[in-house]
Amino acid sequence: MQRVAEYVDGKFRELVRQSPSLVPSKVAVLVSVNIADELFKQGEEVRRREREALARIDGIVALLRREDVVG
Image (cartoon, rainbow, N blue to C red; front, side, top):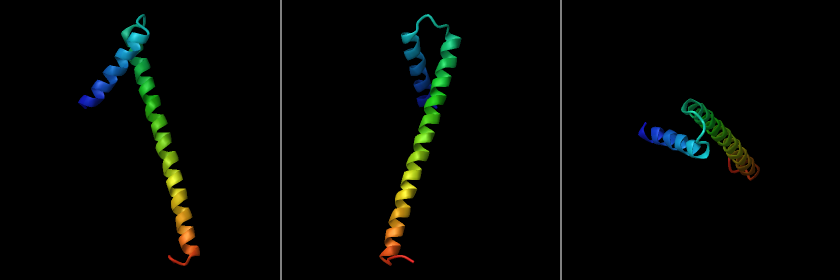
């Protein structure tokens, strides 16, 4: 939990540096939305890689079946 707090705090401080005129409540909302966006993008990337891996596995299994290595 400490690492999460440090990450959020870092994002908060970064946004305050970039936009010092923003009130803290707006910074908090923007940081929350930005972190949620990062999470969704990472989830999409994981699913994409999973699909690629499954496609490769299917290709290998098909090749092995053609070579009559597996049934």
